[in-house]
Image 1 (cartoon, rainbow over the protein chains, first blue to last red):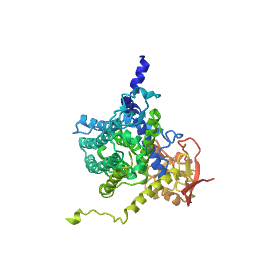
Image 2 (cartoon, rainbow over the protein chains, first blue to last red):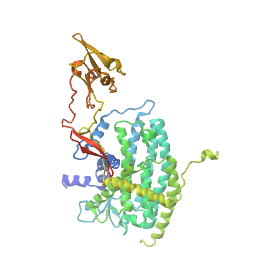
Image 3 (cartoon, each protein chain N blue to C red):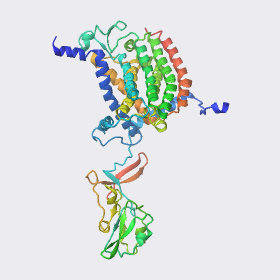
Amino acid sequence: MDVLALLEFYILYPSFFVMIIFPGLIFALIVLLYTIWFERKIAAKVQMRFGPLYASKRSGGFLQLVADAMKFVFSEIIVPEQVNSTLFALGPVLYLLVSLLPLAAIPLSTIPPTGSVLSMYFHEFYDPNVGTGIMAAVVSNYSLLIVLALEAVTPVFVLFTAWVTNNRFALLGAVREGLLSVSYDVLLIMASLSLAIEFHTLDVAKIVEAPIPGFVANPFAAFLFLVGMLIGTGRFPFDIVEAESELVAGPYTEYSGLLFVLSMGGSYIGTFAYSILFADLFLGGWQPFTGYYGMIFTVFKAILVLMFAVFMRSVYGRYRIDQALRGSWKYLFPLALLSIVIGGVVGIWIR
Amino acid sequence: MDKVNKIKEYEKKNPFRLFADHVSAVATGLKYTFKPTRITLQYPEEALLLPNGYRGMLRLYKDICIGCTLCALVCPADAMKMATEQGKKYPMINYGRCVFCGFCVDICPVDALRETGMHDAAFQNRRELVFDPDKFNADFQQEMPTGKTVRRVKAIIDENKGIKYEPADN
């Protein structure tokens, strides 16, 4: 076996490729830059402004984000006194890492047995539940459970960053995150669960391979998942945890320079991971493509969802914490129960 | 105790109406996204046409000035001071203090001070803000950062767009 083929084998190996290259670390950072640029541009559009423009006028100021990123990377990281500096530096890093982790279990595409670059991994990533190879870092029959469990860990690290920085604004933000996580996790889990009941499986790949996409099968669950996603990752109108006008930057108040980029990137990458899951569960994932194209198609849908999520900033103001909690328990929770009932009833016909 | 714990909630007669309102809000946002109406004035390339009598930076006509010191006397911000040049008094101005009230222009008995329409200027340090009589004697000119000629526009209230800018010919 020559070196090139060996290299190709290891680089395209799904566990590595998914986590590090394509929707994982490298691509996610590009998406992060693009998303922040898009968020600023679209908010400006709706508010009758231009947004970033003068850094490369031809591309609509896209290079502004590169300039900002460079500024952040080279600016000083200020570590406050009376703070454990190791833990202080570890906080945002762990947060980013943990918000990237759910990508491991989310299937992105199928691997056809022959005729694709990925076909050499067919047997290693074979999912007996679906009957084909699955392009995911970890193939499991319980991928939905794994993803939800990994997503549920992220609030812990928000609390961790806030606690470590020893700042009042950060602690208040952490308290809000703690209160909110109770409400959005319930919505997300119940919305996913209703789909699991409907399609009789906890395997995301099998839900995608089902004859009808989840959005048609259970629209309530799709709506709840979207709202839960917005609350969970601090997008508007639920930008309560890092409420700029009240809490400076919430849990990330004390961070500057690269650590601030990491902590801010954590929430965006979290949204991206949720968006991929949303595209898989509700928008039909990679269908009708397979292999490489399927992967690109899934991520394309996810980016559309992500764009919608950041678009909300231009439409909404911020809810108060009590409004968000009341809304999610009083209106959305009964809807979640309803969506489970719908899942159970409609599931009789889906086989 | 009961009153303290009560959180104000606006009464919602119909939750479905609430949902419809959210949808219409998002739809409005989408409408603005796909049909953007921008009211930004792109300043260094285009600038508003200033009205007559606009109180911009001042200039001195040194040959008319009689050195009566009235302008320095009336200046409420102590921006105008008199300087002696070859036995004759001329006003000098410190734009760091000037409030552009125009009193000096009004009080001048021989109209030796005038207001120009120039107001967008930038200086490297505070010493440059002080104009001695010779510098004060000329029209103030400064290159625009873009290096191009500024397009003068005037603002027009438009029914659909809000504010519209139309090119104005001086």
